[in-house]
Every structure is written in C-alpha cells, then in structure tokens.
Length: 314
Image (cartoon, rainbow, N blue to C red):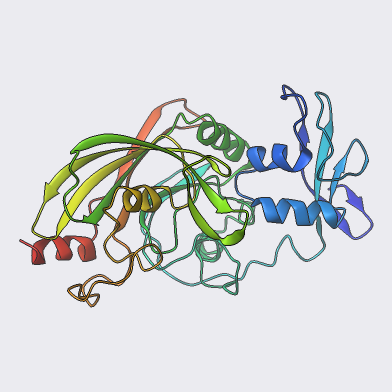
C-alpha cells in the first residue's frame, strides 16, 4: 500500500468523462456516495485528497485523465470495533451480503455512536467466519435511516463495491419501501417530484425547496395499499435516493409518517408503546449481482411493530 508520511492510500480514481467546470468536492460527492460532502471537504482541507501527485483544493476543476488519490491516517483503517450482535442475513456470497436491518441500528459509526452500528456488527460477523479481508470501513454503497428497518446490500470486495456503486449512481437498482402515514392520500397513485436537501441557511434542516434554490431532485412513486380510520399503508418506489426522501415527500402532501418525531409533532392519540420509531420499512431491493450478471430481488415482510399498528387500527 502506498504511503505519504503518516498517510496510507485508501482509494485512487482515474477520471474519465466529466462535465466541464465540475469541482473536486462535487465530483467526489457523486463518485463516493458513502461519504458526505462535509467529510470530503474536510479531507481535502486536511490534504488527504491528492490530484496528480499533490494535495488539491475543493474548488479544483476536475479534468479527464486526472488521478485522484484518497489517503487515510495510520490507525484509521482498522479502528472499527466489533459488535457481537446477531444479524438477519437474507443472502450471502463471497462478494456481498444482504441483510434485513433492524430498526434502531445506525448504518455506520459517527456522531457519537462509534460502536453500535451495522458496520461494527459486520466486522464481528466476518471475524467469526475468518473472513478478515472483507471490506468493513467505507463498505456502504447505500444507506437507510437508523430507525428504518429492512433490506440493505453490503459489498465484501472492492470489485463488488464499485459494481454496486455504479448501479446506485445510475439508478438501475429497484428500491421499494412500505410506509404507514397519517390519513388517506386523496390521490391513491401518484409521483412526487421536488428538490430537497439541507437548507444553506440552516445546515441542520433537511427540507423541500419549492423554488429549487438548494438541494437535488427527489422522485418518489407511491400507491395506496390499504387504509384504516387513522392510517394508510403506502408502497413507495424510489427513483432517486435523497436523504429522508420518503419522509419529506409524504409530509409535503399532508400525510407524514406515523411516529416520525423529526417531521411531525406527536399526536395525542398516538400510542408509541406499539411503534417507537417512524413507520418506514425497506421492503424490497433489486440489483444485478456483480459476478454473475443475474438480476437478484430480495424482500422482507412488514415488521411486527408496523403490522401491530395496522392491526390496532382495524
């Protein structure tokens, strides 16, 4: 592994086709979906992102033929603490693993939680199997929220990582969610298209931008599955994968997710002893398996807490 001072080469990217005037931080944000824009800018400022053999700047205009190198400090590559917790493994090969993630478990370490995440659990799982060469740090090609349950795919190898990453970037995967929302949508079948993202005036606020001044386009196709007195079960198909996309879209049309404390004030007639999180489940995921080229589809039924809420409202 190439070294520069106390840095180790973590990933290198050879730029091919690129839109003119694309900044380095923008390019890496699109290319490395498992890293946030803030993280990328911080790494560039720390001189851990090199272009053509020297440290670069966030506003550098990327050109075809550029060699981008991402470095990490010693000790950062293997600092994931194993977590001894049982995983619900749906499918597994030498190149990837598909997991039914439980609600309440974050995908990756960060923001004060460095030990109790899916990545930590994967490290323990791999160690118990003697698979010490599998990707662990920076292994995620997509994410679901901490309190969202359901299907996720995690690559084990760099080859599988890049193959799956391209599919998510090019929107060729199929992602279907089940959500329980307040009320009954007037349109039983609809497509929602809105720009959404962090408000530049308040970086902690993720919201829909009606005038398109910030954010990226989010597209959700939904249909009503069943309805009850207070709630409705809707099936949402993601065309894009923006942060909190379904939660924002359903709130925007007046039907926020049941239990969503971030985007909806708790109603006095809601008993959170039955459902202690927002009612969202990653029900189905389809993608092309990298090594075989076969189209694979994995699904998991609605979890007990969400089903219990529906049963109570009958």
